[in-house]
Amino acid sequence: MLSYLHAFHAGNFADVQKHSSLALALAMMQSKTSGIACFDTHAGSAIYDLRSERARKTGEADYGVQKVWSGRDRLRSGDWKPFLDVLAGFNAGDGELSVYPGSPVWYRHFLRPADALTLFELHPSESEQLAGWAAEAPVRVLKQDGLAGLLKQLPPKQPRLLTLIDPSYEIKSDYIEVAETLGKAWQKCRHGVYLIWYPILTSGLQQQLKDAVGRTGVRKVLCSEVHLRKPPERGMVGSGMLVVNPPWGFDSRLSAMMSDVAGPDVLNLTHDIGWLVPE
Ligand code: SAM
Image (cartoon, rainbow, N blue to C red; front, side):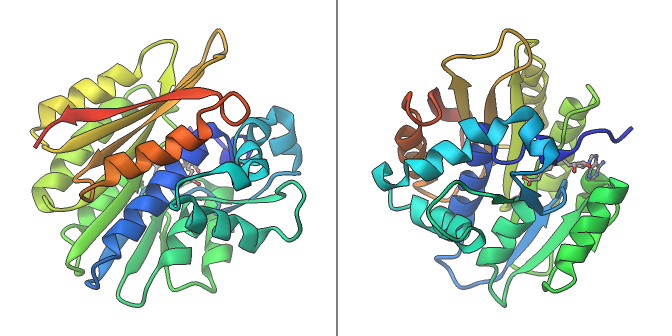
């Protein structure tokens, strides 16, 4: 059952939180020269056309990255610069954005020769598009289950690890499975940095993930959550990132970035950050 297509949601407020966190974590890890094994367990199709029928049907990017882009001169944190540079690289001119990069592209943009990138994607058409994009990039695309696939690849050859776990949570058991996979991955690579995205739903299902992560024994789990100030009555009302082993100072730098976009003229949300599990 693979019905989720990220093209309907690309560039929404949750993508802004997720991709700015990813870009920040990678930049901070790259302050050291040793190589990083990068993994993306649910990669999607890499490049999204914000003018496509799918994107226009929901219009989610209009209240996400388009707001950030149009207000970019007012962003105070210098950590937005790499994020904005990537967007500018895909979008000529000063108008609205028409192209939005997915997680593989954010990774790829910052990749150094010492780093390696492995992408998992199971959906037939998404993985085909991903492979087409990756054909010219020094990255590995595997059409495998991302959670089981990640465990097979650990521990990595490179001295450090950065993993994004970003499922669509179409299946309710995904919340528990993600937590159990994190526990197993951490046993194989305890110093790895793991980013786990999750939706904040009116149903409260995300609590299963947080409770299950708490039971794994994994330590040093930071939790960043954004909550829409004007949420819909049902469905996704915010989004969260768990960050295992965040680089030192990551929390204050991500907070500063989220504060910049929290106002009513940008994403209109609140941001909380704190330890789900301390050291
Ligand atoms: N990470 C992408 C980004 O930020 O641009 C978005 C990914 S989207 C939320 C989730 C993706 O996971 C979908 O493209 C879906 O086809 C894929 N997927 C679903 N189940 C999967 C599985 N078991 N293994 C790998 N990919 C899967």
